[in-house]
Amino acid sequence: MSEPHCDGDICSLGAPAADEQTFPDVRKEFPIFANHPEITFFDNASTSQKPASVIQTITDFYTHSCANAGRASYSLSTKAAQEIEQTRNRIARFLNADSSEIVFTSGSTESLNMVAQCWGLANLKSGDEVMVCFEDHKSTVLPWLNLKDLLARFGVSIKIVPVNIHAEGDYELKSIREQLTARTRLLAITHVHHLYGLDMEVKAIRAIVGENVLISLDASQSVGHRPVDVKDLTVDFLSFSGHKMFAANGVGVLWVATKLHGQLIQHKPGGSTPGQLTNDSFTLANRSLPALLEAGTQNIPAILSLKSAVELIERVGINRIEKHVSELTHRLYDGLKLLPGIEFSPGFGRCGCHTITGYGILSFRFEQTATSDLAFLLDSEKVLVRTGDHCLTNRQQGDDYVRVSLHIYNTEAEIDRLLAVLTANLA
Ligand SMILES: Cc1ncc(COP(=O)(O)O)c(C=O)c1O
Figure 1 (spheres, protein in one colour):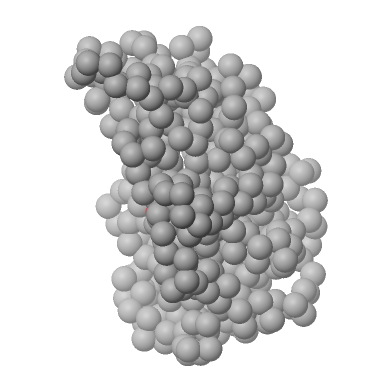
Figure 2: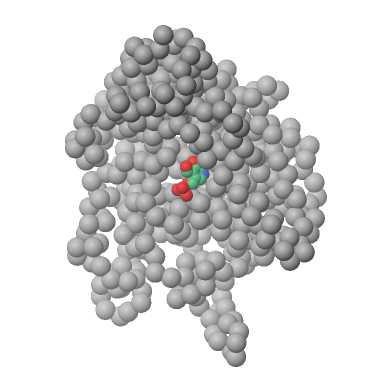
């Protein structure tokens, strides 16, 4: 690897230390584990389990407060609108953003598509270039390939420039540096990789591309796992899903830096889009967020559940969550590497610098056992992991790994259980 992944910054947590004391209490807040003590849930990169506070928020909305938000003058409607704005403020504080920069969406996939549709469609011209990495999640990459096809129908030809990835699983910064041109307008990249589990070095990438190239960051796997501060990251767009950070399904966030608001076009004009009809044209009254991007009735209880999820994360402490998950990742790696026939995917298991923070994602397979067989075996032992195509954009035939992904309620005992099951079943 020409550029060592492990820089001073990410090594600063040092060697893992035991910190099991407080996390069993957090686990008790997730009813699924009391209802199903037999399961070991290791598919958190796909979705997280829900704490009682999030479930209560959703139930409360439907049983006590159900009304559309801001559509009427009666108090239940006003209350819903106020609670949405309180949630927006809370999310803004959580990300070190302004609340006018927070847009509620249906999830990461919609947020990432909105960057292409609401910014790209309006601003890209023939000859402009967008960098993506085909080793990223389809939701990070496909919105730009789709936009390229869409623009081509109108005679606008943009270029998609692929960023390389090292065999160790991090972006090859050299390929960004060497392919950067005066026509590079935007990079669509990932904060923590969903299969490789590495910090993808956003700040180093910003230093390479300078201030004038926009960065759309997919933070689906980092929000709720590590501090995410939009000012510190110096990106322009940031997307994530609620359901991966303990909130409900069907809600997500798109953060857009204020300086870009004037460059956006509407997403799905409708109900609350502000403006005036003149003959057969509709003139927007303004381009203020969130109204420009949030028309239509929203998933109100899911939005409100974001606030409950952030309250839990902040009560436990995001730094402590990061440390706990990192310690579990190291324990898992230390056990897995001793197993016969193991082959790690690119990422944490292969990058050769195991003092780095682990973000709870480790992917691997075994020479002697098909990954699909292993998935059945683990399921029969109630250990729930992910296999299959992992939504990788450039998935190669046979490129199948078991992915174990962890979160705050996972324990050392669960890691040891997985290792014991594998040890007993691998010849
Ligand atoms: C890195 C990454 N980006 C985007 C997504 C898409 O998220 P959603 O399906 O919630 O829209 C995922 C989900 O697995 C992901 O891991």
